[in-house]
Length: 388
Image 1 (spheres, rainbow, N blue to C red):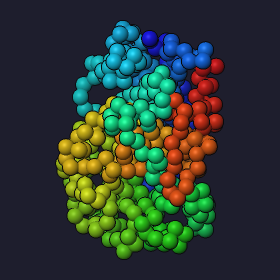
Image 2: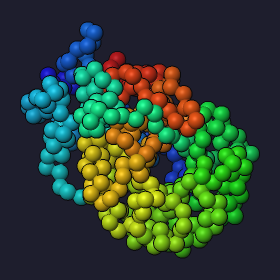
Image 3: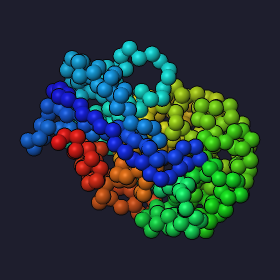
């Protein structure tokens, strides 16, 4: 058993939208196809992967560092003899050979993209959906039958008024979501509060609305915004300030009475550990949003979950960023608290399989071997295009 080749391509996910910190007018992502010599039904088993939105495509790092290491490795160094399969943990070791510790940022995205493709291939070789394989190997065979999801949107958009924002949120509710998220911090406080109040008229209760500042505020701004929204009783207040400013997060957590959420821009177990050590986050209340596709992949994610358990955090307090099927499989197989969803943006990478509907805020699991990309036609077309 060996990896025959890995193909990669940078694709555009550009959109005329913005959060409080960046716009997405030139956003890209990397897509990879990992071809093995294992054949099912006469065709080679191929694992697919991509990186989540918010970080650009990683073509240069993939071509110059990580793919050459993978392709020159001895086939035996990549295998899991116990399961007669590829070994994602050994592959991770090969990819990270001669990489110094620290500096998690771009390389973690490149490795996370490849790691997704590896796990897709591993589950396909095993003939199992990834969520089932994870539950069988790491959770005594117990998987969640459905996963709580929320619809992420509410971006700033030229010409988008409050009525259009309300229409967007109604559309999510009409599709089965019960909780939505909107962007804040990119407009004056009074304007953002008007936007929030307009959305609350649609969703009904603060517990059905999350707000995300994407790291926009300094300490004074974060506290002021928190004080202004506290009466709404929102589901959570997300990433108020720079993700690495743990002291600021701790000070904000001490003043804001509601649920805090952060972590999507922390790309290693070590950075996640610093957050729970020094960020003032409450394991009985708050939400952590680490994204495996941006943080070295599922192999690192399992180390992060182990670390969280050691610090008194339940995996149910983890709700990954990214809105993709990889995180959905992880949420079901490793007992996370839910998953983000992008119903209308970053197509075709956001959302779930075409045949799986959101019902009462929950989504079911794909029954296809692998991650299930083949069940989302527009996404699979992009991925299969790498093999043409």
